Length: 284
Image (cartoon, rainbow, N blue to C red; front, side):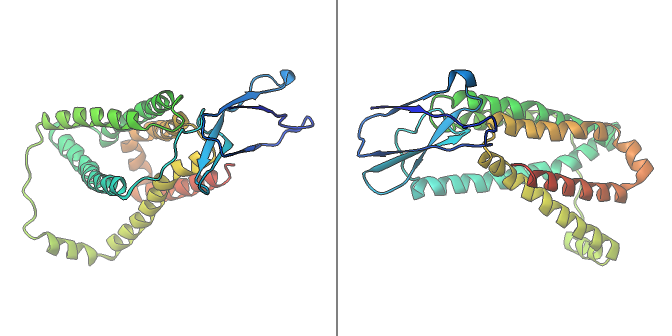
């Protein structure tokens, strides 16, 4: 069965920001094709139209057009079983722990290498930001390209790219002459001594708040942008813009720290996060 949709997006020169059209198919067991024809004076559609397949009553299939969705309707809809969920949960849990540990020790490794061979910490960190700025939009564009005719978003490209880059990074770290450093005789005693210093406790509290803001953005930003209809390559570009803007500060980190001090840098970071959250809140 073929459904032709003739639809004018607006009746005047003032068009609404978003239009939605529902097509309900009742008792349709065969494939259904949808075509979209725009008025000749309107030109080609500016935004692609996708279809959502909602879970409704039995024998009632419903597809909903929405801006920024997939190009075709998914042929079958079925909920993920518990086995798939728990496999993903375990893999995600283990992967997050190991990745958090690896990222955490990257800074001490960089500091140890700088202390041993000389260098600037900001310039060392510059290359990690440059890698994020380069590969994030490339991976997003690859996801969009591989998903263009599937009817759903295939994130396999992101996992494959991550695995390749992870192996390259692991080999690079393995070949680095890091050396060893003896741990503290009593780690818990040293930790208690730190918490006896009021100014350090306040500093840790500020870092806790700043980390919560950062974690909130990293956890929900992409979901928020996807709800707004953003394509995957745009999600990568948001990472690129953020990392590219940090490159001048990383390159001149030593001079900036010397002039304004570490505490003022943290204060600027708080205001920057506040401005970033306010900016996201006004996006429609």
